[in-house]
Image (tube, rainbow, N blue to C red; front, side):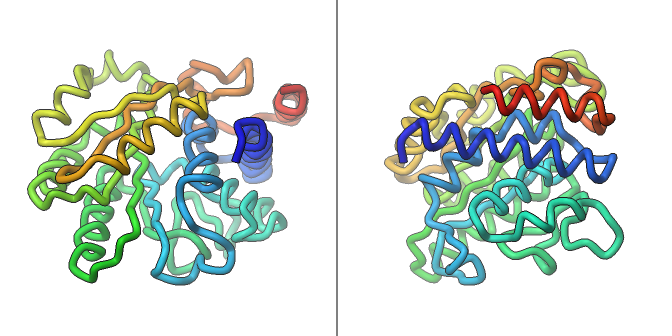
Amino acid sequence: MNNQELKSHAKNIRKNIVYEVYCAQAGHPGGSLSAADILTILYFEVMDITPENADGIDRDRFVLSKGHASPLLYAVLAESGIIGYDTLSTFRHINSKLQGHPNMNQTKGVDMSTGSLGQGLAAADGMAIANKLSCNKHRIYCLIGDGECEEGEIWEAAMAAAHYRNDNLCVILDSNGLQIDGKTDDVIGPNPIDDKFKAFGWHVAYADGHDFSSLRKAFMEARNTKGQPTVIIAKTIKGKGISFMENQVGWHGKAPNEEQYKQAMLELEAE
C-alpha cells in the first residue's frame, strides 16, 4: 500500500478516535492519536489480519499493552472492516462490547484483554513462545508506552523474550514523552531506553512514528532480525493531528466538548 493510501486510513482512524471519546465523554485521546500511524501501517500493510481471518489463529497477532488506548484499537478495527462503524458510538457505554479497556472475549479482532500496564508484553511473550512450539510462522506485535516502561513487569517480560529468543516478537514503543502525571523524564525518566533494551538482549530499531517510510523500514528490519526480539522505538507526538491536543499532557485522559470536537474534526478533515 502506498503512503498516500495509508495517510487516508490514518486520517479516518484519528477521526474515529475523537468520535468515540466525544460520544462517551470519557477515554484517552492523547496516546491513541500518537500511535495512530503505527497501527495504520501495521493493520493495512505489515500484518495479515482481515475480516475473514480475524476469528482464526493462522494470522499475525497484535497486543495493545497500553490498554487505555483502546479508542485507537477500535478505530483501526472499524476502519479495516473487522467491527462495524456503528459500534464506535457505544464506546464505554454500559453493555457495549467496546469498553474502556479491550476485552478479547467480547470484541472481534482483539487478541488480548489488557488494561493493567505491563501485562500485555508478558502475554505477547507467551503468544510468541506458543507460535514457536506449534511451528506457527506468524508474528506477534505489541504496542507499549514509554510511561508504561516504569512497570517492572515490562522488564521481566523483556528478559524472558530475550531468553527464549523470540525473534517472532516485535514490540513498538510509542515514545511520546508524556504520561498521565506529566513528562516521562520528570516522573521516572526512562532514558536511555534503547540501551536498556539492548542490555536485556533485544535488537533495537528506530523510527519516526508519523512517517510511513520510516516505520516500514523499521518493521522490515524487525522481520529480518533472527535470534532475538526487536523493539522499535518510535518517536511520536501525543495528540498528533489536533493542534490543541498536541504535546498537551492534559489530553491524556479527557474528552472534548462540542466546540472542541467540531474543531478537531475540521482540522483532521483538512489534513
